[in-house]
View 1 (cartoon, rainbow, N blue to C red):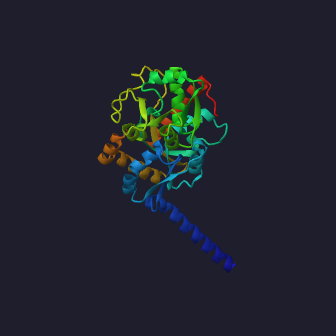
View 2: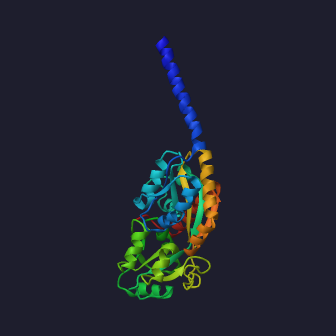
View 3: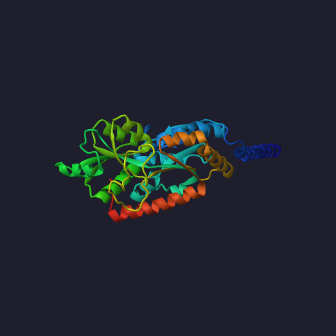
Length: 329
């Protein structure tokens, strides 16, 4: 009986200590490095965006914030990894609107993944227009010339994307629908690889973020035909908007937007610290100046607003995908 009492006392003490440690965790958060997962390969728009804010996030949180690229399955490898991670605030996701677009396209047909129920939205980060770019060996310097070029060949023109359901995939589908251009989709494992093959002349056209396209266009390695913003991009001021190029399109947002998410159940205190850190970073003049050179607009909003944005985006893109009968490939 005495041994049982002692065992019970020890067990009680251990549980009490564990409870105290758990209770202390939010106030001590973070006390080790944080992984910021990007669901695509290095060199793409989301990876580039993540690396623009790492230093300031590290400073704001007092712990290293490290990018971890987990590409595969058109984003689902990284997205599912974060959804299944411990909800302790040490595994986060920097996602873009592909998160909504893929849900609209796949409708859970190939996955039970659901970002609306499996993620905590931490904060909206930024937004950025996209650029329609072509290889230098494409005989087109305007959108209208590209349309004519696509119709001149004996076969359908190919276009590259960062993957099925990616931002570049569905934005190109919106563009094709708007101009009546027939083209074959060639999905890659990330935007960096897609743009690399356009640079090499292996594939004629893709959409890219302004931060990826800017130096390539200025260096003469690819040509930019139009931007998806309502006004010309400060990063590429000589490039017309789609509207200026005579393109009308479906009522969907053709910009990249970025937000930080974590697995469902992150302690409120940890979420509050993350939210505060993101707000601080996105208001930092050094960060804003750096992003402005790439035509990325700081667009901070708290987690509730990001969650609403994601829900609205899924609904809007589902309407477009269903109306145009676009199928997963």
